[in-house]
Image (cartoon, rainbow, N blue to C red; front, side):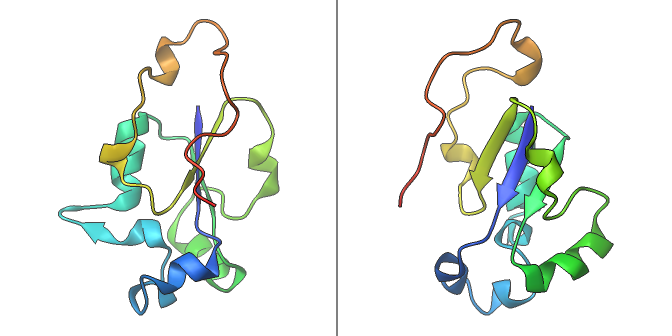
Length: 114
């Protein structure tokens, strides 16, 4: 499963200013690890891609080897898009990607608040 972290809403980013003027929300630390590290551990994947505002993308590409604002990563059917503000401990995942032997039927969208 590919985890895609999304931090594109300027209105939501403003709630974390000035900390998010120079970094995505998922880079904020919560204790010893960042929000992104907590989400990656909860989902159980190292296949991660990022979508963030264009003014941060160029700098963030230099800091990571993972895809940044690359639409090609959206191809495929095993994608898990997560808003950067989601707390990992509130994510109720019942199965891990490597335990799935058949397609899972269910809604395509979960946890939308807008």
